[in-house]
Image: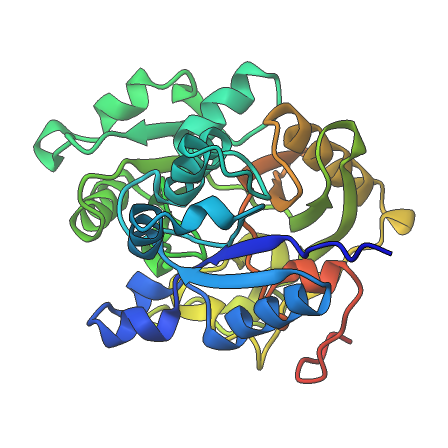
Length: 351
């Protein structure tokens, strides 16, 4: 019997600890992978019979190509988030595609689109997929121009004149750039908040959305095209969660649907106070509609292999797509995909 040679799998990632050692802040590195995640994926691929080549980040890929090492590669596996530019998640896939090296997960064009939440919402709206009313503040905007001009240019002007609104950088993930001031109650707060985000994220558009006061879900999806299917859906339940630092909001006095959202400060502190709960579609028509909408969105954007769709409901009871991620965090404890798949890490209480 002829023994088949194992496929050679180059593995791409950015190490959180490595970039922290280079002087980047925790917030700069929040999307990067911990060494334990990188090691676990490497070992899992090897246990499944693949020859894994841990490469690292974009610069390491360039060096490998320059040395001709890429000619031995069969199929690339990338969880690279990138570090610079609004299309950073697509940089390694784009270079792989240029050298005709096949890779798993979505293609460079799709990853680049999905990272830009403003452009994604424009495409979703064109396709008839419900998304919250929005406006995009370009990097060239300054507070001297006033924010009303931006709101007037949106096709959703009437909706955006009603508070509260929500602001965040258009091209970030892991709640990076979302703070306690992201939910705004006045035009003055809106202008000041946008200016703060522009200072923190120069050269990046800022997204203004109508704040959705209903329940929030994350639906995990496996597969591509017609074969794509929902793994499961997580409900982010904010009841009893402490308020973000620097706020005096009495969360216990409000309904869960009116107060909660992930921000940079609280997202990584919720392991001790988890908000994720499995959503049972058998008992909820709302969850069924969320999953139907998520799968439709995934297919229409031509996402591949695995990822997630974040959905939040409005006071009208309708679900609206918040964002789509074709590059899913794979940490065995913190990833909602892990919970959606039915795994219960021993260090978290999901009861």
